[in-house]
Length: 490
Image (tube, rainbow, N blue to C red):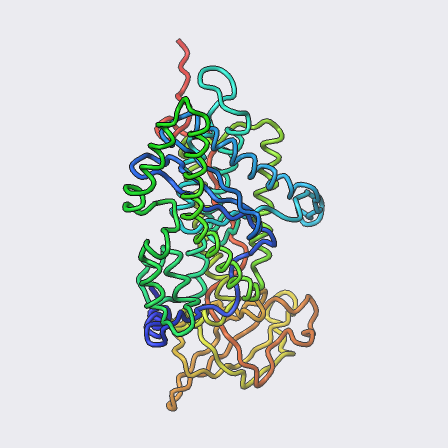
């Protein structure tokens, strides 16, 4: 936890309300996300019990498994869920746009929008990942056949679960994570996994403090759990008798219909409060303006959605049960690079996030006191424009001479530290030489060089392109690392 977030948590306790730790929204929010609130049966391995799903507050559809231990009913639930999810995915596959690649020498096409799934908490993402794993290898023929939509559902759920691992991706979001990314509550990180408690801090009832609202929200007698886990008291005293009543009515269609309706009503009552909280949370996020780099990350989600849709259309197989050595190393590097880019982009978009880096000595803010925008360096084979500026700051400057810095206001420009002169009055003078972001001529365009009097933020964090590592093809990998065994001639 950073110093600023710890301070914000303390301020939330003092003020009785969550405190903002962001000035912009760092995640894309779809105009029509698909909200999914799952429930699982306690004591069983990812056995679905019910789900409330829909793309609008008034479009909630309840899916119920009357006997979660029954294999056929569980896959019937999967087919019902596929009947909701797959048409939702297809609704984003109508319009494409051309995207230039290879420096404009070629184009590719991607969908202009992509689906977005919202679940209450990270446990909901785990539920979808496990449910996808249990369905994507099923077959519509042979022994124990399932509906043809079930394996397709499993493959798409696995796709979304894998996108959820990508830092900055918004294809599948846990609402608790999205909210606590932008606000700090006065409770622990573990308590922040409980959606009703988080919203109790963000939007307490009139006259209540966040702590009081969160305490009430944690009492299942007032607010049911947000899933997929259920409350043990509910399981023992209400759910178990309802399931037993349904099972005991076998052979009596009228009694079974009554028991099914009662079970559905019971589960709807459990899910509806969380459904309403989900849309309240979406409204809070919508009130924040999106960051400048959110659209670029969403473009990455659209690329991924387009690519996987084309893979499915071409008859490609399901995701493997586990990655090979090369695929695992490639995935790990991709996630590490995405995590670094995600941290830098958030800092560039949001001064509150950048403030955390300033406290860590990775950035400083100062005022430009001198500027020479016409300076030309003619020591090389040809003269090049290399303006210099002097920045005076009261913050620590741990960057050494020769370090390359960047400004969020001009991310394409490099500033090399030439001199660092500490002053007796607590101020530090930093002389920087600028390169890039000024065209190819010997005259800098207006605004491309910081002017005297401008306050500027400088940091070693770079949002530039980072080339990936080179990995061998699987057939060139030794058998000890996933490659094929060597063939020996006899």
